[in-house]
Length: 177
Image (cartoon, rainbow, N blue to C red; front, top):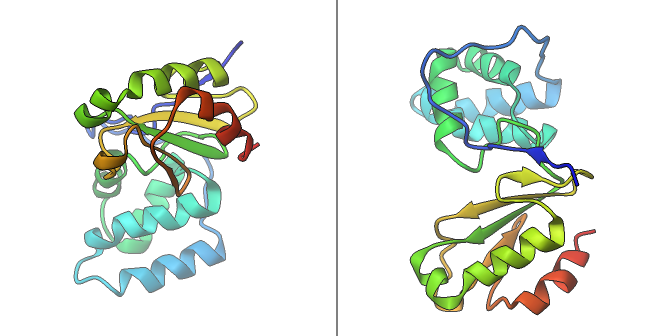
């Protein structure tokens, strides 16, 4: 089965080249960014929140959005791109409708995340960093989800699931179909 390769945190912030794609913030995005930038002493500090605004609206942050955000904030494209590539929660390529993050920390290793990862890969027919062909799910490893006493753990979108077992993965993911 074919899958779409995603690297949501692709990013060396060196020699940045932005595509010449036509991009405009919609009115709602522009107003939200203008509002948000006034909550920070310096515009660069607002960039993570403004990136989230675009991502919430579009599902990811295209190259053109970096330039548009930078213009509204009055900072360089490079400043916005550096923030976008630093945070793994900001997606610089299209992702699935549902983001699955499974914890691959040392503690979840001890509690058996490997079986959860293998089950996810088999069930979805993708590897970590990829998106299903129907663009329903993107699978991403995450260093820690903050539930070390409840591992193995994963999140689907904003929902946290703890004490996972391989047998529970299929029924759990069916809730997101």
